[in-house]
Length: 322
Image (cartoon, rainbow, N blue to C red; front, side, top):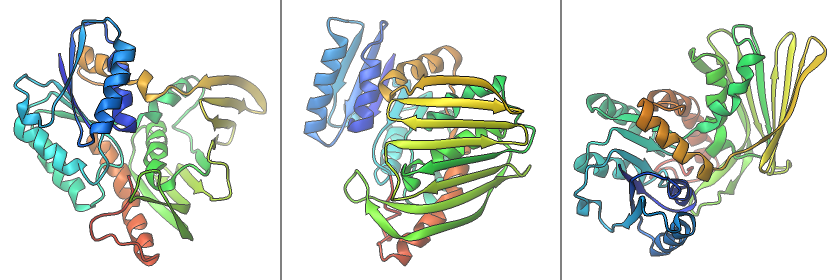
């Protein structure tokens, strides 16, 4: 089994860290423009892989050097580079599965353009917005057919992470259509963790076609390490507080506490191998499809673009979020 990973920075190296532990034949082809990132990735791989000869790492400068058949491609670049890398992959390989990071693209017209491209090829495309399946345990307690309100608050990265919470909401709504109700941004932005990218603060409200409500609130005066998630219906109230590596979930139904657990937030290095194994054995996985995630992105990107323009941030080369 041959897997290609393009981009081995913070996220890409975690994909490799996870796959390095595979106990069956994997060959990981890795490419990045940064020699420093490649060196760090080799160290991470060697540390996890040890004497395991079943999984190998091959670093390539140009993916055209690869003569093997590539089954799975993971593109872990920033949003500016992603469209170019997808084109390069599809020009050289016919993978069964393509996994993309969010934010997918920083130019709005690229979303529909790639949707048309993906419809013409025999490749399944997934987006690594994984938080929807973190809430699968709710199926025992929660009736999505009843109207509910979901609220997310804190200081959690409105531009880069909204699609994660929209994915949770859409998953709980059983994938019925969504629309943006209203939005309010404050006249302030900050530099993102990646150079050349930025974040906004404010509120976004989204409704489903059955009147479920999602409220996304991101405030600069809140702690960045804490995310508060609430699900509220007539008889049901969930409080889920995410702090660093754990989240504490409490459910009250009809005034009675029916659930209280502390959950561990798995890292990407603990997810990717499981994801790949699902693709190999079932030809599918729990991630949203490109079409589903496209819908989530397009709900909010125009609003981000307009606010950045209003604040004097250049968007000529794309919306500066990743």
